[in-house]
Amino acid sequence: LCVVIMNLWLGSLLFASLLLIGSALSPEECQPLVAPVSLADPSVIYGKVNFLAGYTDHDFHGEMLKLTESSWVNITESPAGNNEIVMSQGSNINGTCLKNTQSMKIEGNTVTSSCKFPNSHVLPSCDGCLVIAINSTAKNIKILTELFKFSFANIQDEITARSLYFLGKKKSVSDMELFKKQASCLGFSGEPNFLHKPEKSFCKEEESIKLPSSF
Image 1 (cartoon, helix red, strand yellow):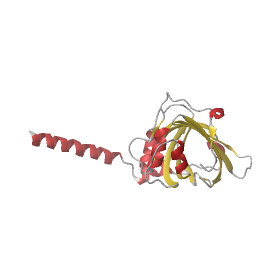
Image 2 (tube, rainbow, N blue to C red; image 1 turned 90 degrees about the horizontal axis):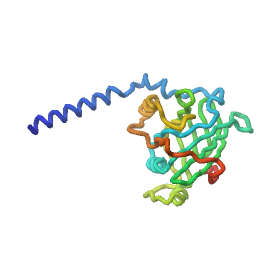
Image 3 (tube, rainbow, N blue to C red; image 1 turned 180 degrees about the horizontal axis):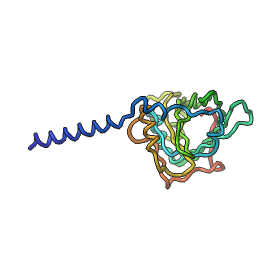
């Protein structure tokens, strides 16, 4: 009986493995899903969107996403012109509302910054949605750990990470099939590190603590 049960278990495991292998997209199938969207007209990314789901490959970022209750991003044209944009972000992290604003520049199909997000790309997504693949550098990490009162062993004061964020004008996630395929193509697996819960409210700008742009 034990042998029969073991064989059934192994058979189920093999079947599940084959399903996973079969569901993996080929490089050819991934290419159009992760090809950067043209930013020749920057207005395609203008507007306010809510952070609905996100993956990251760094443990510290993962812990920060666990503490994040809600977050929104507003992208506008910079008064300076010259393909510059302004990104404002308001986040409720562990019950504290924070706001951060920084200037960024569009170079080709890449959004660049001198601090938090060295370079980002916008990927194909649904109408009213925004998917951003980010290579980020976070500074002043020790200050953040003190601010939110959590310990992180052997943390450096500056870290780099890859992340993939799904944002939308709605306040809930309805269809993430495309986003999860993009995540898989970029090497992320499992469930997102962050998934917005509809019952969590978003911070208002006037009630948020303003952080320096270096954060």
